[in-house]
Image 1 (cartoon, rainbow, N blue to C red):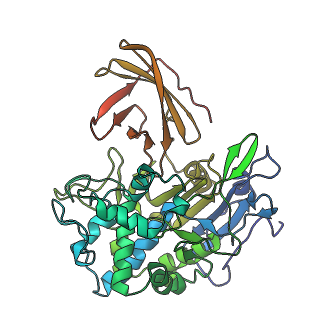
Image 2 (cartoon, one colour):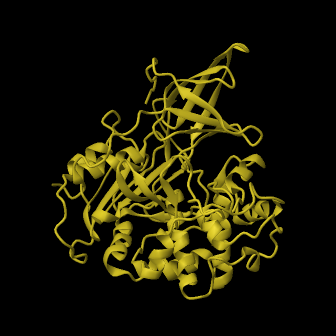
Length: 457
């Protein structure tokens, strides 16, 4: 097999039990685009008991330069970064320098006093109610996150007089909470966050090609992000250069080193750190920190719990033209990473497919894609849902208007469709969805069984 097809790293250094067989060429076919000669694609890694099964890639990191993706290409990790932010915090927590139950105003005294104290673990588990800095940036007039500095993002957060809800009483995914968590790590460690994360996490793990950004992209072999346009692709590198909620540039070969530490090395992923990383968050009333009706709860920058009949530890990431999925099945000591530099592919579906190429048909069948006809009795409205990539359109008919203007949404990394201040959230089995805004919450639409899904992909 050609070396350019499969890049296997650390094979000699990472001894482990015999792993399941898989055909890397079949995996490569999953992330290849046969219709376009020069197209972006994905880099993929699979790891068993701390040892790489394979590292492979298809597509271009830089179309104009003719540079292909491979296991050493730096790719923007987006929200996959969050687990590494928690790892940095956990190293301080286990040394007694930071407490999970600490009021964050101890470290950020300039924050307003909210309805209830916000704790460090509330930031980690998205139960703080702290507003999302990316949404605030957009609403303040910024349409290019790459131009938004950390100072501006922190200033916006500090200006927020209230949280989305009383801290500890609800769950809402917040990039703002993770920006504050990184700032706390910076102040407690006395070092810029990226420097401390490199010293305490990345360097001990051997992740020599990974870096947390602080206002600038790193050099070297870095993938551009691409979106389809006019039969080709245009570069869209408008992701934030701020670390904490995102900001990690990493490679699949470096994730192999991370997997080794989780399974074997335990230099960073110690038993005490593992407990912080995998402990699901809880609300003040004891309920799990979860986005209902999902059966997965939010832990240390990771979603943990059952999905498709298996116990998963996972996190996705998405920013403009980058789409990533990193899944781990701890019971099988198996990890799969799919990092794509194109906006029109679903890395979650591809990661599940890679998993089944390795382990066989172990996953319960996926639910139907989000499409078809849904009805709300409260609105007397029918929504005809169609999707194309991350975009969703809802065509409306109702007695109040023969044909209402369609609503448009975009799939966010947290699995919720968002658009124009609205959220559209499907149930796990796609039998219903809820539509809401800050002023109107919980309008339920139920799928009409006599209409087939109309989904374009």
